[in-house]
Image (tube, rainbow, N blue to C red; front, side, top):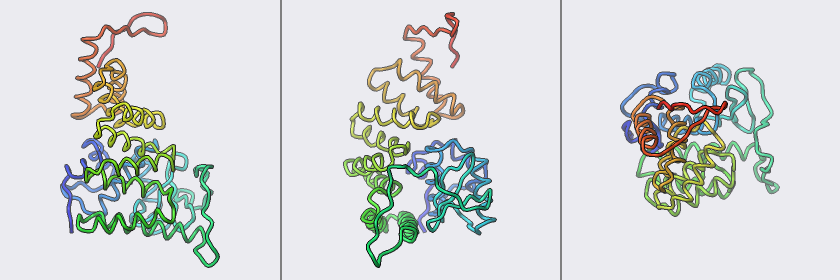
Length: 303
């Protein structure tokens, strides 16, 4: 079985080491130096939840524990699709949405009103069974990504999913990430852009789009993508960090300052926080910036 080191996981999923440690402390992932498919898939889902919700690691853990008690799912992050429901998670599985905290089936009020159910020809699958089939195919494709030798097979399944549901954003993201890791940036851009169109409120899609545009040296477009990510999720620390870098590389240091400071507030410990603090200090020491309080008095800035 293919194993990934901590550095492999951080690179593949664009994670900060501190985030990995935080999830380990919360009991969402077991501490280890090597990761297999199940752990990689779990981390991928946790990354997506972090990018699109403000749910705490503690509440995610409580939702997963409740799902195991209610539905017997050992790994609900892999066996079902998690969606936000208030301060915790509900899980879509087999066409139904189960809230494990209340042990009730729930209406999915968070589905975008612009999305529509596909019309299934007579004799075909019902919408509920089609959704379950797509979910099963998706899980299988993620499993195949575990081994480099079977990544082409995963890509074939993702392509098949897109023939059934062209707007399936998680598939578009995963397929784009495969292309990104292969340095096939044009193909990755296409997938990420399709994901942003399929789900205009999917912050991770805009973040990943920004990353590939940055690799292609299209900084203005990358900046716009990162800006959209932080507009959707103001607490998206990684997007603030990359946006600050993009601004600095374009010589817009004052704009970069705001996002360096935001990053430090959101993620105050670790090497990236130290770098962000250092960049903020450099800007404050070289730029003549006036920061004024609400009462009109100038105040010192501590970073």
